[in-house]
Image (cartoon, rainbow over all chains, first blue to last red; front, side, top):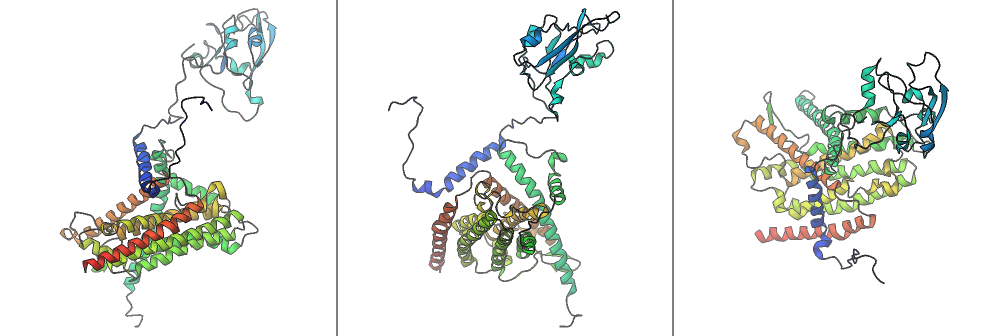
Length: 178
Length: 347
């Protein structure tokens, strides 16, 4: 039979020599190997104190953005929901009323905006689809939860803090990359 | 002998010594479990337990607390008294070995000479042997009383393993006794202190045999077949919970420390610090140096035990028996004959 690769090695079926059958020498060899590992660098990251850095293209939890005056950017056009391959995004649109100009940037806004984090595959297509820069993926990930319901994030969970009234929280939520 | 003429101070002295030895042994054992985990971690490029206290030093206390707080479960079909007796027996047997180990030279306190050895029996090594073979009863009774097939199987394994390896161990010891000419551990150590070489120089093969058998007696990897998880679930302590399980696990570590102490005493000069003349310092300081030396030797042996555990995988059962009966016993017999021939030739 022709060999598929050149990497195969024939099994060594030679009977063991006396020194091999003694085992002691091979055991000592093995012990030397384990001993040498005492001086190796540990790859462990001591998690809560030390954190592994995310890659610069990391796509984490979604954030619904606001403009400089603290108005919601989302117009509930539904392009993100269309773009979403996992069908994780649901929204309901509403019309901006008189006197709500300081809340919403455009005439139309999302009254309800939900992302199911169990369905979401964090591909970032919603971010690419958005014409208003209203949604982007941040540098955190969804924390564990006790129920499936807890993974359906609504507008309160997604919306970034207001840059005017709570500037510090806004800066933190914005992250380094945004 | 009337009660009045009885040396009560001796009784008190021995009692204090026993309490100190037992408590110290338990404390060291506590930290041996921690050491085991740390050694395992370091050999596997991990940090090991490091959360409880500085460097994880309180981890054994947390473990002990956890074991005590766990629910005590006694299976309804178990033989209740034997079920409770098992772990107690295992622990007692392993602690009893400490009675004949000479920890150091005599202390001189309050105008008395205090021997740092609970009992200098002239058949010290035979006593050790008797007690060590007792420890298999702890496993046997525990395994049998659990009323569980796997536990029983593992108890049978433990018993046959202990019997097979005790023969080779005894034969290795006979060769040692032929060179020392005494059974008393105190005399054996004292001869090594005053003599030129430690016994391991005269009995290298005997030491290797004794060491392997000691490992088998302690049920340590590669001889931990009674606990083989992959075929016996958990072994003889499968039905045990809470501190009774803790006693079994603890007894293994006490066994390890005790066999380390005995190996250090018999083959590695006991409390003898090499290249150091004890008579140049005050007797009490010499005794303290002796204790420290013996403890360091014990720690080194315990480390060797752990190092081997985290290097070699477990034997298969037939391999274990092959090694015991077809290799260790003939080797030990050969060693005995060789020693006898050499002694005769020297004469």
